[in-house]
Amino acid sequence: MGNRLAGKVCIITGAGSGIGREAAILFAQEGGKVVVADVNVAGGEETVRLIREAGGEAIFVRTDVTKAAEVEALVRTAEDTYGKLDVMFNNAGIFPDEDGSVVDTPEEVWDRVMAVNLKGVFLGCKYAIPAMLRAGGGSIINTASFVALMGAAVPQIAYTASKGGVLAMTREIAIEFARKNIRANALCPGPVDTPLLRSILSDPAKRQRRLVHIPMGRFAQAREVAQAALFLASDESSYVTATAFLVDGGITAAYITPE
Ligand code: NAD
View 1 (cartoon, protein in one colour):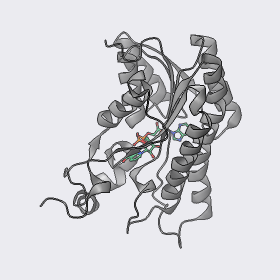
View 2 (cartoon, rainbow, N blue to C red; view 1 turned 30 degrees about the vertical axis):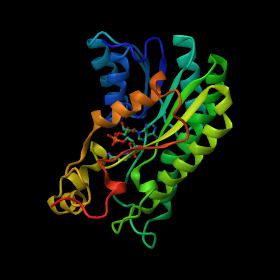
View 3 (spheres, rainbow, N blue to C red; view 1 turned 135 degrees about the vertical axis):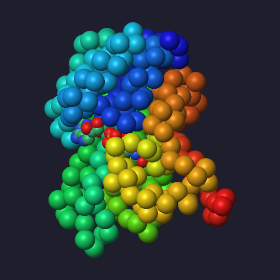
View 4 (cartoon, rainbow, N blue to C red; view 1 turned 180 degrees about the vertical axis):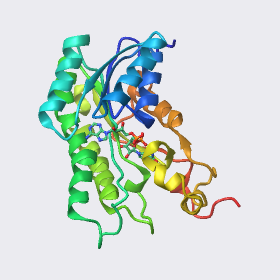
């Protein structure tokens, strides 16, 4: 066990899978008290089981991040259980297959993606910030994506727009609360090998279409993104705020990649 988050109370949304689960495990290994939030009860409970098995501290709170009352209750539970809130990792997100070109993405899909990916992050910040002010400060990590910064010829229009919104919203939150000891950063991963990308990763042609643009020539592992979230959550990043924190294997800097 490390101590990079010793005593810090951390909420992680979407911690029942992928990046959120890896971050929950890592944060607990570093001494954090982790509040695992997810709509998926089985996934969330499994994350807590894995943490406790390794001697870490965690609870599960079933939460739909699109529901204000549930996010408010999540923050209250964190404070009631562990006495304060130090870190809010707004990680929950969706990437539906029906999200595509602007001309044929159904309105219902647009609304659903915005509700989880953008409104969910808004609600997480809305209820976490008063708790952080009570605690004397904190670190907010909002998951955007490299697609907030680059366009693709294989579009997911609602997803991309939602992540652009997360990036802009996070910047403004960071500036507003910069003198209140609250930092806020937008985490921008490149493509990560998680269940979210299942339909792309399982199709050789779709995989290759993306791999050619990644200088490192591989997708990220969830653990590699969780390590960046750990840095942003910890006091090691005490002068880092309002950033688009890229963990993208070099994609956004590349014109021609190695053969
Ligand atoms: P994942 O699908 O493995 O995990 C997402 C989790 O969010 C799931 O456990 C799911 O149940 C939960 N969730 C979905 N809707 C929810 C809701 N309404 N309330 C609470 N929880 C909800 O995905 P992942 O790849 O770990 O993605 C995590 C974040 O990283 C997302 O915001 C995603 O957009 C972002 N991201 C992923 C990639 C990638 O390539 N995988 C790249 C860039 C950004």
